[in-house]
Length: 136
Image 1 (cartoon, helix red, strand yellow):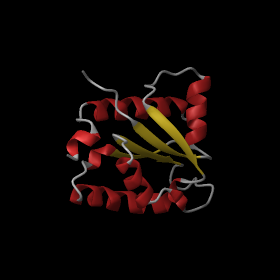
Image 2 (cartoon, rainbow, N blue to C red):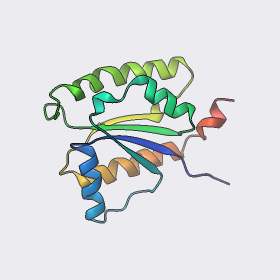
Image 3 (cartoon, rainbow, N blue to C red):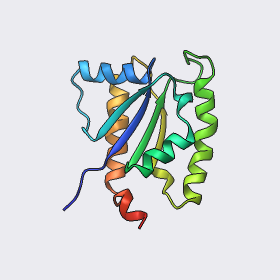
Image 4 (cartoon, one colour):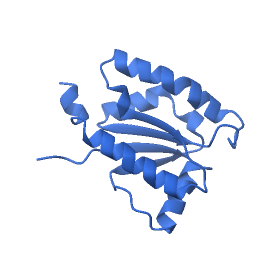
């Protein structure tokens, strides 16, 4: 019996969340596996929050923000672009497959891209064993 992966998506309020809204309004299809959490800025997603999300049972975590240069807060996505690759290394060090963390930039006008990255990431996470099984 296969279980559907549990994916948590932290979406920037100004771009990615609105891209998700656009995907919904256009009735674009993407898997329902993602639980969306709207954050003011992708730069507010701390490494501790991502680690806690895995500890609480997520199989995958997505951090989606504004394109570089388009951040509502000027440099929030620059912070994300710097800290998430370091977090991926920390995940590997702690025994968590870094492929379970996905970072991308999705604007408010990119509903199709939003749906596409959700489909792709869900497909990738579906090929991995459930997170809880990997941590036994």
